[in-house]
Length: 117
Ligand SMILES: [Zn+2]
Image 1 (tube, helix red, strand yellow):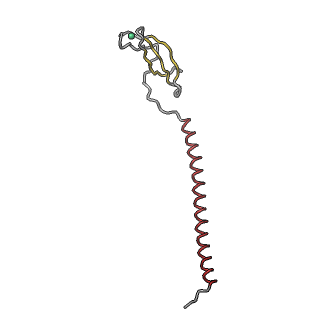
Image 2: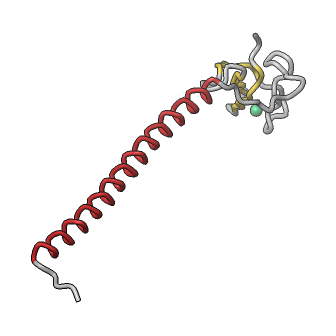
Image 3: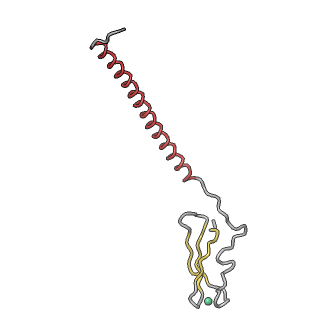
């Protein structure tokens, strides 16, 4: 039967402390790796967002676009062709132009057409 001396007890405590310290160091290493990984993922996602901003989205445009002069809309109240008022390019899509028509009765109609290049 072995008798534990105070120095044996202290040595056993130190072994436990060193083991715990190793676990702590391993935990710190894993945490640092996770932080580093998250930084890489953030950088990657920023690059992906920058790339996405340059990609032109496919637009479902009519196959035979009609310009404002081609066919003015008919006023639903008067059943008469409306007159061209003003147009401006879409803020997001350079291919789209919003055209505003007006009728003598005061009704207006805004149409989106393919911008002429
Ligand atoms: Zn009208």
